[in-house]
Image 1 (cartoon, rainbow, N blue to C red):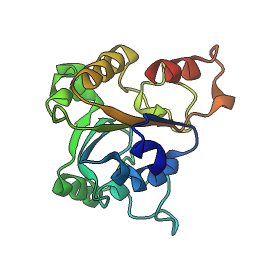
Image 2: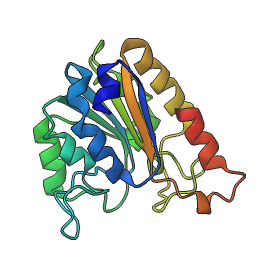
Image 3: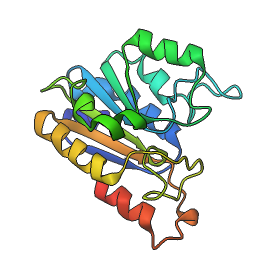
Length: 193
């Protein structure tokens, strides 16, 4: 990943649990400047460790807060029960992460999200499929009603891409064996990338 980023390549990482984002974050220093993270997820993913695992699926954004190349984060779609403990929310806010729940996006649109992303800054996009409403991405392990919709996500990503250089992205936590509705989750994931 470092080699590809040094060549100016835009990376797309597909599949796995959200822990696959961590090695990508480790290579962000090769982008050549401070990077803003745009995170779409039902969960905060700021756990220090889960069952003794420190670099796993519940920890990528907490890990990102330790990466020198990461200059800030915007985390959207948050809503799930068990998404985070109070100390994790406090740690994310202390880092300076912008936390925007799905309900706020439903009420106010994408403008509050766009206001948190510095124009001209390289952006890395990480999407956990459960950040999107399960009516549109049902094939996830933790479906949670009330997520953001594709009609919100698509214009958000276009707006970010117009104002920033998206250096890469991942889309994770899709369970294809649960994608019973004509492959809807995989179709939506393809449209997001």
